[in-house]
Image (cartoon, rainbow, N blue to C red):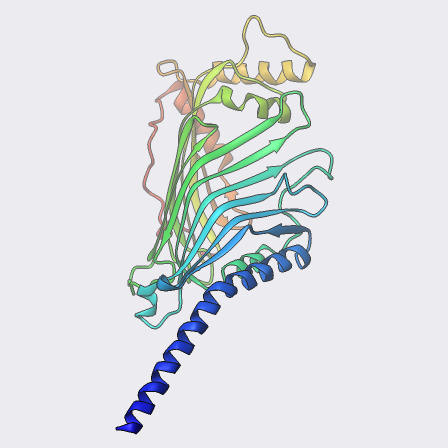
Length: 361
């Protein structure tokens, strides 16, 4: 009986030791990991620096959270980061563990990505000169089974001009599921990607794709649409890189792209509705701008369909991913047909799959 009591005492003591160790790990490990991440991003990145505000563990669900991530170019201020993320949540994908695979689920909330262009190289911030794969590996040291992004946005900025350029894609909601095919699907493209966003706080962007991320070469089928962007929302951009501006009009774009075996095939269909380039009261600040707008107005007058007042074409491409061939003359013919014979329908053709990707000769 005395031996049993002693044994129970040892078990009781062991339990307390384990509990104390867990408490110590829970309290001090986040501090240590936060320090390690900040030390790496402050000292080991090539062209950029970074930091996180907080790191927290959620042991009960096998997860950790990173809050207040910022990464900026070393020669620039922390107040103007290339990347900022409100919160990242990385948790174990239990469905993968049940099948013998150590995988994770990643959720990114509130990412902001600011690309800065400029004639002055010192002002540019385009993310070059950095091994981003290594950085991501430090923050997410586990292969992913799913990915979600919410409440995020991407900006292209240029402050060289009187009217600063800010092209923004916001309200980004993205998801990728079954990345490592834990569902054991026999489909050629088992992973699914969906993206919705908004361009210039005006037009909706929708994209969807089926992919095989495990393939050695990019293998996917995708569809993308941009629905009726008010073209005047991009006037600052066109003035900076044109120069040209628009009085009115809406742009829609539809596209399908498929790829396999380092080959690609697809098309892009742009539609420009009721475009008006020049107004009677417009003042031109340079001969180049007058020439650009006059040329565009002439092309619009000639090629737009007389019934729906829309210019449209279809540019098809196929070949090697790094340098596909574009059917330029086919696009010219399609635009002429739209303008003079029959208006092109604004819809996806749904006729591009990986079966349509030409094999390498």
